[in-house]
Image 1 (cartoon, rainbow over the protein chains, first blue to last red):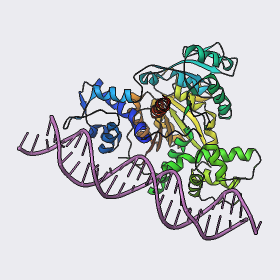
Image 2: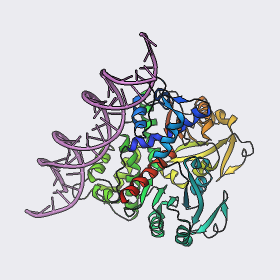
Image 3: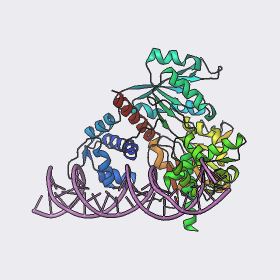
Image 4: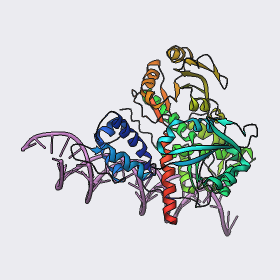
Length: 214
Length: 214
DNA sequence: TAGATTGTTAATCGATTAACAATC
DNA sequence: TAGATTGTTAATCGATTAACAATC
């Protein structure tokens, strides 16, 4: 079910780091940035950077590189990050609160404007200035605001149950920070952000590095 | 620099979800789990699950599947998750605090036992029962405890500076939650956990899904 | 001009999927 | 036994890297 093939997934995952590099160069007053420079900064191959940037449609100048302002615009537009997008956080625990307070999202157009939690003692309070509502109010809030994106930060055992409620409320995109995969109808996209898979990579890298030296 | 080839990286990233599935089946009182069942739960192909599990060395029984207790043990041992590992959090802001309070890590053997921050008003306080120290105390603490793993949750602009301090203090593994890639000598492994690349994927999936219906 | 860089086309590499014999 | 499942070997697919002409 629900397996949407995202073409060039690895390239898309790398785009945000190119965007950051471009913005930083812009801040320094540069006009152009070359794939060679980006590659050196990020420890990639220049050819990979060129291939990745090609999908955004931006075009570079031989000997100079990519013009920064069009480059930033091309990446933002390709990712749909050039327009404001409001989102909900569902599960106002530690991780949910941290994401609400995370300043980096606004630079991608992402604004968290409400939180929801099953815990009634949190309801009515604010977290980093954002109001917390009861889960029961979800559907009504989604309908009245037209929001279609939700960040899921509940305990993993309730992930599917809450995801079902999100779908029922009309949410169309779920950023899932629980370890449990959730299933949704095919008109609702899910991005799983499994921290434990990153930790598996770190553990493995450490083991291999260690063994290599031994 | 520092580009350590982790063989079978995609397989390693999937192992934690197999581990979770196996543990859940064990809780339900099952004795075996088949690749078919795991694949259905996680929306993978059975052949992929079998290939992935093969690297851990566990062997299954035709018609039954993989015996749960050896399966859990094999994955944990392969990832080095069968022994306790202590870690530091550096940057005790929102995200750092959330990771300190995240209950899931202990099931992978990961225990956060201290936090560090440049902000002197935090020093001496506790976050979820974990003490916060000044950055200046880093080296001394690393040396006295023998800890070699750090979780980096500082603002992205100070990522490299703080990473350098971690290396200098003797840290050998850095789990980097900032958007900035950090460079380290080759005896220090880094795992970059770039949230914005996940958000790029979600944005793209949503756009493609939307366009397909239009 | 010389040389660095882009962008395209082709080659390589690695991961996923298919096929199927072995097994319980 | 029949049939589901494992595990291995081969085929396919897609991503990365190489080669190189075009360009400024």
